Length: 398
Image (cartoon, rainbow, N blue to C red; front, side, top):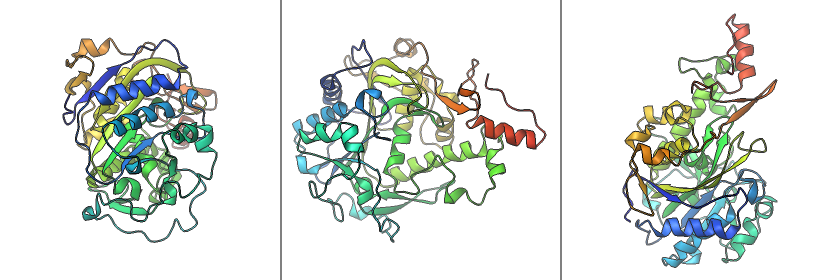
């Protein structure tokens, strides 16, 4: 089936457990990708970016399963992409000592011209525990590949068109100069972004320290902490609102590079909670594919049982013209049948119970969405401390 711009493609997998063999992940990835036709680049690297935020075992569902990435690589190789053009990237400490050095600005004429200034395959060994603990070392070695620490690569400065927080972002050269970028997140919730999918996974392509968008950054330092803790007209704290704009800036910059993109969400087993150790896993049984990160994220968020129109980063992305967060306006095609799913057809695949994101506060954890579907601000204790200081009524979590 030929991939059409802005469409989302759903591939269903029979899943009855939350711990699955690596071969089942590989088969789902390979079968879903094989059903979709899209132009492969004639030169340049094909870069896969999974979500490996911390050294976590594959079955925790905190990370993209290495078996899923192996399945994508197998299909790409079956299509004739040579091994030496395939790269799987993530970033982890230690950082290169000269990471703060001056970097070149983005030049579209340099894309995609191979791997100038990048480490050669097999020329170094990943220095941290992340490749081993996550299972990527062993899984990729079977294909003659290794996980590449992109913090060891050159950085390329890319302008952000109409940026709200960032006016430029420093991407790894692996991403900014790729022939194709394959974005491979895991389907899970997050304490701040509510759902962490294709959009947030791109954050991992930004070089440190700009990568750390959840925290107060240099771009936020002109604002007092009290100001960042106050609620805006959006119902979010200024800090959370700026975080959403950071992600919209990130999307704008990625699209500015002109690198062709494909999103493939590992949704066989999803995770609720904080995105890290606090949460539970759920059998979902799907893979989502598409070229528009906002559309794929909106459909995945809907399949979680959440409302994408109430999800803060999707609201901001839609308002900035980066895509729609209205699932009814997105064409969702079932890959196994080729049919377009109407609202009733898509609703059949929606998870019950809802995969709920939670955030920490003094009493433990609170759900990011209330029973009426409205969003609860992130860092509620900090928000309410400021509201009390301002003589305002605290915001409830329910």
